[in-house]
Picture 1 (cartoon, rainbow, N blue to C red):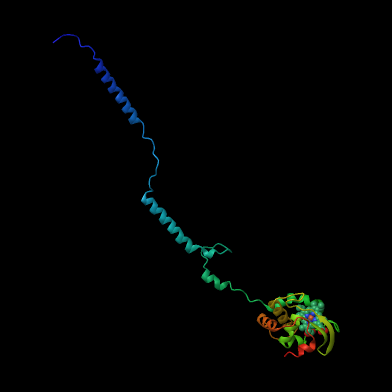
Picture 2 (picture 1 turned 180 degrees about the horizontal axis):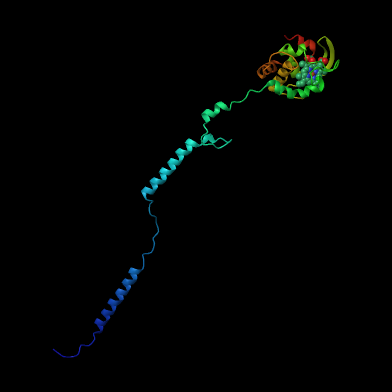
Length: 220
Ligand code: HEC
């Protein structure tokens, strides 16, 4: 056994030093968090279920309270099935409509329908007005000219056409309103002439020029 003093062994020194550095490196590794990686984590099933239930619930609510998308007013208690019964289209009053149209006729036949003696025949009490529907509608469609007798008085003028192709081209409805109006105004008491009736007469009527009184008299 030698009693040489123990010399520091450079190899052991080195190993100790490397132990230290290993610990240091580990400490760094423990401190540093792992780098975030790409990818995604799936949504928790519970949250997914909750959102689905919300959407479903909202849809149910909306379908039930959508109020028929009424543009008039938003009322979630609006029920289209009962509302339909109250918003029925009002029937138009042909006489009221006709009165407005009559302004065109009044220029000649006067506002009171009495006409102008010897020039414009009266509509009040006229056999042409309260008589045959077929003749009256034809007068409106094509006009009338030449010698004419109304309530035993003679006329010889020109009544313009109001039907299609004429200067006015009034619709079947307009013609039905005006004839119904003059048949029921000023004490005249004759029946309504519907737009359907006007259409029926217009469709079978081939005339394009104004009628004469004698030609009309040949029609029933
Ligand atoms: C530009 C003037 C004028 C206008 C506007 C006019 N009429 Fe006449 N109307 C006459 C003339 C004129 C006669 C007679 C024709 C003849 O002598 O053959 C007549 C005749 C009539 C007749 C047959 C005769 C009678 O007195 O019953 C009726 C019905 C009639 N018109 C209704 C109307 C209606 C309804 C209107 C309005 C939509 C109208 N007229 C617009 C001038 C007019």
